Image 1: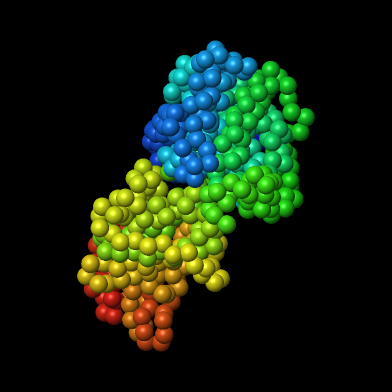
Image 2: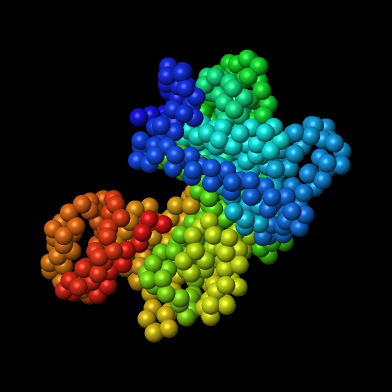
Length: 293
Length: 222
């Protein structure tokens, strides 16, 4: 059985057995959870379908959050992508950005989502995976399998650092989601297990120190847009790893650094709405708008 | 921890602590009512729950749980209307409960027949909860395991009669946690028994027949 106490354990085991990380993890989880691999894949496929539905729900023009502070971002970006033939980033990425924001918007409007690893960071993995499925025609089975790789990376991060904004800041939520997505994308693109680890490392490095400072304490501002940066970093990190641009700090050390940085963050920047954007004049005004004085 | 703790849960947003966890606290009340629809509920919101419940839909989430919905049910969004349609009178009261976890709710319900009960629980992060009070008595369980609540009179031998029944009639059951609380010597008492596996339905009925047991409930893994 796997211990999930380092990424190195996962990549080395997978390379020794000449299997993908997802295959290794599926076999292990099937044993641990005393369920057949097929039933776990079915459950994961169900989660992927929830992600696809969340994209559709959140992409509606009239999507509004419960507080009224945000809404319609996914639609605007999709519309822009279509109008301009892909804006600056190109059709594939602008559409992916729209999907990530749509899922985060679906969450803010009390729609159904898959926490991956959290509700606040729930747009990153679907933004990446639904885009590969719909715009690059990757088989659903491969996408669903890659979610086991993403999940295994998240388990290691949760064990050695944190996936909670209240503990480690946004780096622990969107940073972890981005690292998980980067690993999944790398596997889907045919990368080796250690390249999956490299991609995760690069993604974490790029979000180290990111604080959790939600306006009015709500999972909206800046969370929805941070799902976009998490998605962009996941794509670029996967591409870097696949190109052979290795991180100079190994992934497990990056995760340790994330924990250390998280511990060093003051409480005001760990989901308490006590600092950062939350206490800017506009942040405070928006809070008053929702909750009164 | 398993893979679906990370890729999951499937839930209604926006917050695992303020929405999904709140549904789970409500579900404990639903189990206490044995799934019946209450005539009225009064819900005290304390700490962060009191300050931000509207933006997180915590009020809808609690009511949805009280009505038996899961944290992934789309009905959560419309839970206030659904409760009204079912004839449930509800009231939310913002009030600090001294010493309570920042995300705490206390649910007081009344059934048609006049019987009533209370649950107090805290949402402690990631959708996980801790139930602190049931009918005024201290308990301590998370709902992550199958939990048996046995309400009884504080008399010698009642605990033994319950555990002996489990030992001899339900030998496959293993207790992972046990907690006892009482109002006063000889008064009302409650056992909280967490069990590794799901017990057969007959267990609750058998426990209810034991002397000095006033009621027994099984709260399945939430």
